[in-house]
Length: 224
Image 1 (cartoon, rainbow, N blue to C red):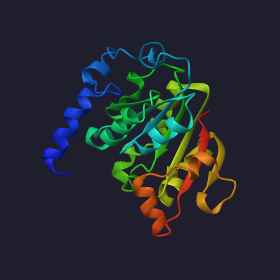
Image 2 (cartoon, rainbow, N blue to C red):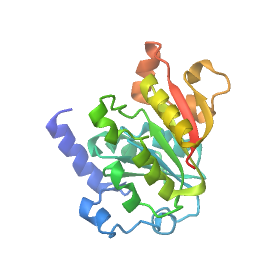
Image 3 (cartoon, one colour):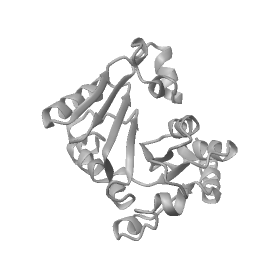
Image 4 (cartoon, rainbow, N blue to C red):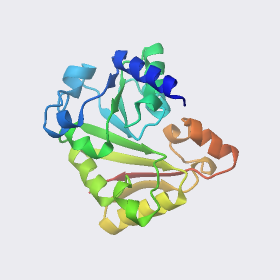
């Protein structure tokens, strides 16, 4: 994407009512205004809050919002030029139950209060295969501890990935730490029992993976 295109998207994001771009300082100093008040002040309803971490273009957040109008969806990514597409689509389609935050995922506890979130989707994250990159892996122990703080007691996490490595690493970690695996499959499109929201919604890159017969894996789990 050219720098002109990026600038245009950044400028447009500034005008979108469904895009929130807090400063790091605002989050870490506890001044982020929606923490603990998402239902009351932003969505203005009591519907459950569902996050998509590393939301990319925002296709999953937007598709879930259309499929589940009785839930609120928030896509989080550091690259605003990417989720510009999802934010714009949501506005064009009058989807008032979806928003996007431009920030780093490790700051998530500064965005949401304890028990404020009901579900988390992690869709096609970078598996961070190199050992020195493990601290950035979105299902490592440190990230799971962050998720646990903001999830309500019945809250669950979904991991959908084309990476067999990420799938295996996460399953091993979950079993080893005594977390509850609710469903796991290493090829969701070849299994008739796969959840509808897993196979009905595809990201841009996922469609490309499927064209070359790459298996898509999925885990649904609860953090103990």
